[in-house]
Image (cartoon, rainbow, N blue to C red; front, side, top):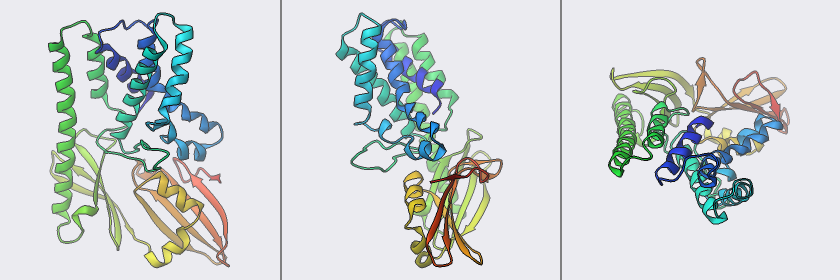
Length: 313
């Protein structure tokens, strides 16, 4: 999610405690800072987008990795803002970090919550990258911080209801897609993701042995829209060309990707496409492994945000 949303979530979370919401309060400042520091992995972008997207939402978003970040942040704030114990600031900073990882877990990018035990990115895929309603809920917690717990409870209930509504819509979207493709695809192969456009619209991905289908679910209109249908690469052939740096990177980067093999006179290109996000009717992220005629890997190229961007690694 975006920094503004994370900051508002951190502020709203601390406001529930009833403490001062002055930025001079190290506990309040710690909770906001904690809600922001996991995204400091953006410094990897100083190298290039490959390093940034490879490490983003990795160790800095894990339960273990957030501990040293919280401790360092709490140490700085305790020196700059007197009035709070180090352990109190540490607690609220870590709570802020947890709020960050929790809400990132709810969108499609996910987070490596259990790094270093597992590098898998866990995701519930119900929230968009930017969600206006989440900002409203936590801003309301901040605004009604001095009200009785009855008011705070109502806000929390609305927030829980909202999450419940999103989960129910996701379930309904999967039912609609499963009915549409009944008898043609396995129900378990249907994956539902939040759409970047439209509150009642969802995206779906179906990966089968023959085809990969990407489309949209319009819940209110009861309509299924197929956006792209891609032929699945032969597994026995594809596996031989996927055991390379690009394949390993993409398997960690996204759980939903398509592989296309292009044969040319002097080389073979293995093109990986992330199926989660589209912009201007095109998939955002791609990568290419280039083999020569002898089957030797010559180049690994990442195409972040557009096929026109080339980052060799």
